[in-house]
Image (cartoon, rainbow, N blue to C red):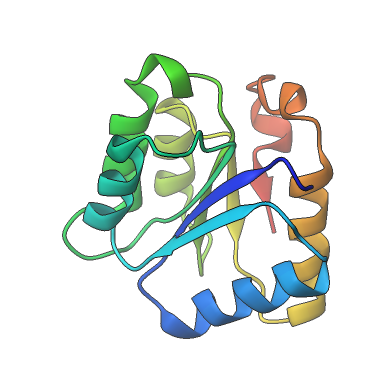
Length: 143
């Protein structure tokens, strides 16, 4: 996991802290940028100082939501097939369908359990990014 570069965008400070703790528990040694809204996320993306290998975007954020970020990121040639995991606290079929159609790699419902969240993150971060290119609905929802 050392060569990975993550951008995590979420306006919930507790979720950001939990994400950091999970990465520490997983002994993640790659690069991590954590931002609190979609506007900040796109500033990081557009700066281009690090090639991002995994995006984690909360759907409901201020200034620019995760779906708007997804749209902008997928327009960039360099990120056409990069894993983009959409994060939410609830299952909403309209939102799932929208994210799938717009090219998200996965739709992840944030679990209430730290251990379950850690297992989900470990699975995502240890999955070969080639596996995210297969855009099928059967493995899209992670809950």
